[in-house]
Amino acid sequence: MKRLIALSVLLVFGSVAYADDINPTRTIAQCGVDTHQHLYRREPFSDSAKDLISIMANVGFKRSLLMPPPFAYNRPYTFDDPSMNPSLLQITQTYPESFGLVGGGGILNPWIHDVVETNKTVDNTELMKFQVAAETILAKGAKAFGEMATLHLSAYSRHPFISIPANHPLYLRLAKVAAEKGVPIDIHLEVVNRDVLKIPEDMRKHRGKKQGQNCFLTTAEGGHNPSQISNNIEDFKELLHYNYDIADQLGKPENARIVWSHVGWDNTGDMTVDLLRMMLKAHPNLYLSLKMLEKPGACQVIENRPLKGDGFIWPDWLALIKDYPGRFVLGGDVATSNPNRNTAANIAGTWALLNQLPQDTALQIACDNPKKIYNLN
Ligand SMILES: [Zn+2]
Ligand SMILES: [Zn+2]
Image 1 (cartoon, rainbow, N blue to C red):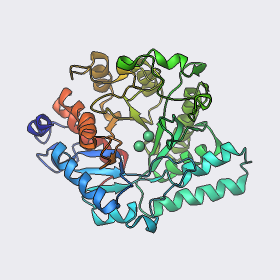
Image 2 (spheres, rainbow, N blue to C red):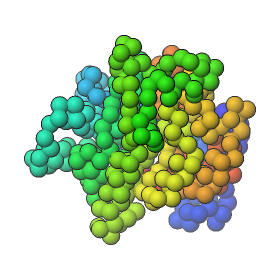
Image 3 (tube, rainbow, N blue to C red):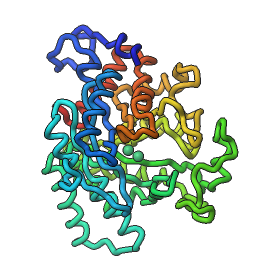
Image 4 (cartoon, rainbow, N blue to C red):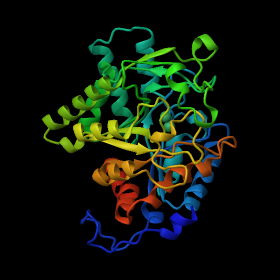
């Protein structure tokens, strides 16, 4: 990461696309934002927060957006839960220069998951209760809704399998609130762009060094994943359309923003550059949050990762980012301080992408896009 710091982008005012920026020179260390982070929960958030601040300084960026992960029903925490002592909300208030708040993963995601799992009827009363809960999250200071999930694979025993159609009535209501309030929704979406994904048959071939290993155990094998998962990209397109149409009807199409998180960290084999290009072209309200762990996990499809094994960017990824520079952000997505996850290295792995981009594009992705998409000061 020293390279990133050394490379700290210095731009002369006038050469960047955002002419409203009054700072004539700036560096990623001064303005870079990681839009998707969690705090490690097995120690007080006050300690995890300090660790993350020091990692951010070492990697070379300024701010992180903190959010609860997308809970199903297993012991969720809400961002304002005082028993977390301090809560995520309090942490973001204590360190406003370093952190921003995103909320909903501990409240709205388990809500929708429960409605889906129990086949509960969604009537007007339920929709209104959900809407009020969503609006309250924003009123308490959240910059976005997240981390939400539509398809989340379970990789270990305490990791939930979540499957919620992205066009579920409660998701559409969330998209409506987001469009009206002008905030984004951050969504964890493992993508199935085929009729049916079979586990483990369709995933084994992607295993790299550990070819043949089954990373996502099915319920029959003692895990939590089903053996078949249906196509979900069509439901996601419907959510994107709906979010955009509402904002457009309000005369504010720029209000429509859905952030697809963990792009570049593909576990199904379907998150290809071709699919991403097609989605960006068709949906002006779609933004991609890039994540690349420093050492790709055994479950990951290496071919769909932006950087090759030698650290250089794939030409088709570079072309995609250059064609849509305003549509990308970075989201390291690690639970800080967890000694088993080599947190600093994983955040550096995601931010290493910037070394492979033209300087103005790197600055746009690190600084300008988060500011614009998440309404940051
Ligand atoms: Zn996630
Ligand atoms: Zn996450």
